[in-house]
Image 1 (cartoon, rainbow, N blue to C red):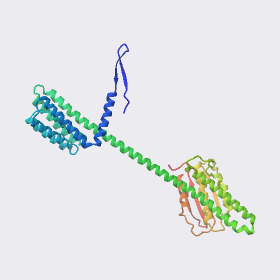
Image 2: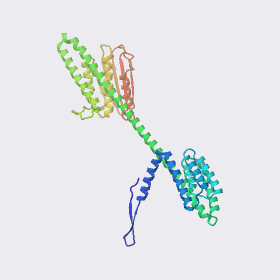
Image 3: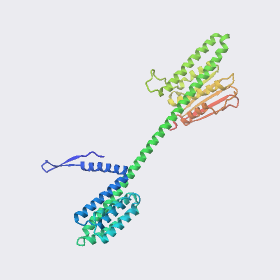
Image 4: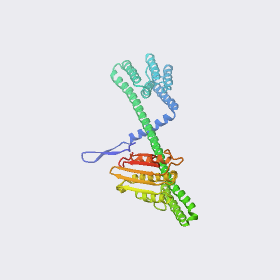
Length: 412
């Protein structure tokens, strides 16, 4: 609703003549909206009130003209009672009112109760289709012609124009209200749809975030626990024969556990409501592959790392994907490869293509297959950057994980 504005009309001398304000229009609009809400909340009561107003106006008009009679009261009652059914069958109610009005005009004079025809035409325009509106308007126009010719033979055109204008106003008002209601209904539907789509997008985003966190947690926990288990086993075997090696293994277990805790705190820090006490550690990058290889070597599996090209300029997301896939491949070697086993990581950066090849020489161990959560997580990381991933046993023995990425082909 627009705010009423006030303007000044000026005379040729520049003096204001009168103030012109738009507050009547705004007030009428507010009253109309309130009346519409009341009618929508109490439809039967509003119909009864409307019929009572028409009846009172008709009786008052007949009484003031000295034409109040039983016949006129009967016609008034018939018009108002039929008007109570206007919401159920608009066209049928209009036809019944037209029949009563036609009979009245044959045996009696017109009265203000005939305004029920205008209300009925409004109902046809509001709830009926175009054909029904044209039919109702045609009937009303024919009645206007007959009324003008019968009761105003000296100046029929003036009466016909006035009656036609009233009928046109009722029809236009009905069509306008109908279009306004349709617009409001479409706006409410659109708002509900947008709200549903917003909630759906929120749920999808939350599910994607849960999957991302689950994938990161799997990579962190599976790798570090595998390393710690291997180190603990080695420390248990060497505790009697070589206490120094057992002590070194225990220290490595402690360092690996601390690293795992740090990564988990970094990952789960985004779920906290308050500020972190310490700054978050950056996401792992390709430069940390050597530390990853040292950790696996300490667990008893020799690892050879070869990097061809300069991966330092790769996007951080690509570097994280490379690190996590290499971490998962080495974790699978620790968990599943039969001893003795060795591993090799080869990273090739060639322009728009990045390849990671992780192989191990461990013989097949029970339960080693390509359908686990780790393989699926690696494949998702590859697909996220428009790449591909292959994982499976090697013909000469051992296991191979091969991933090819396109840094510029991130999936949207």
